[in-house]
Image 1 (cartoon, rainbow, N blue to C red):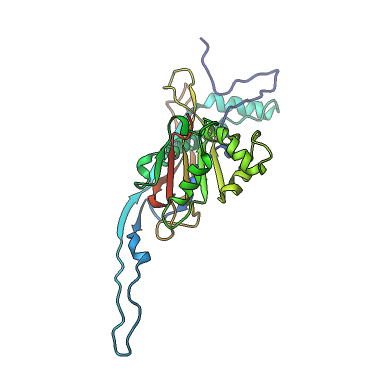
Image 2: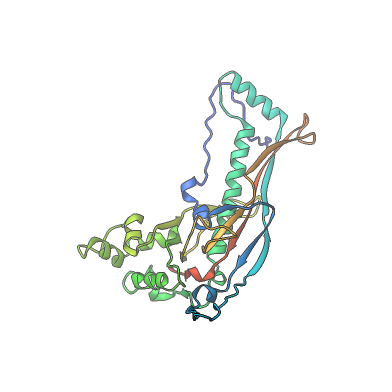
Length: 320
């Protein structure tokens, strides 16, 4: 078998690279758990008792009386970002061959730039799967703010399920902050967007057949965003044939997302602490190929956090 290279020089044909990749709009991790900058690898955030914000102490002060004093306390938590990165080796012969092809205007392919792009795509795909697992974990929601559907109650049962009641219950089931975002996997949206009860409610009893848009769905439930995770991940082990699956499953989350919140202030269901910017660079490596080569490395330093379980509501197994 001929050795495989990431780039093949063709003296006659102009190479056309066709890549299968998740486009930016199919990934929703950054909108579900918005990124916020932190000042160091280790950072602190404070969790305040809920009752402090809603106490109703005596505020009336007598002419010679003392003003009632309140003492606020909180639980300081320390966390740290995780390093997420990947690298790939490129032989010097591949780099030289690509440079010659570009100089002769037979190709515009740059193996180092291409590798950087593909590595970052993979890092972001892994993040998407990581955020999906975090947000779609029932343990990350407060007791009483989650429900599991089964059988006739699942939205895939058009004849018997009642998605409007289930979603309204979710939106009314959080504490203090009403969810402004509905996040779900593509399988859930595929069923909900054509559910007769939803179509009928939006079309004004004119029909119960058709497809509604995300904007119409958001307006119906009075939420800001309807986020649908469309991205795919490869669940096969290295060396095995690809086995693609959706990163987001068959669940629905109603969450309050505050993109302005940060570890020191603001309520939001979750966030992503990010230290610095994305990192990418080349490292010379004499052990790559006969002539040596380089290793392209790229990554980022982040930590996903669920910080306010009470402003989220989870509908598990929304569809069969």
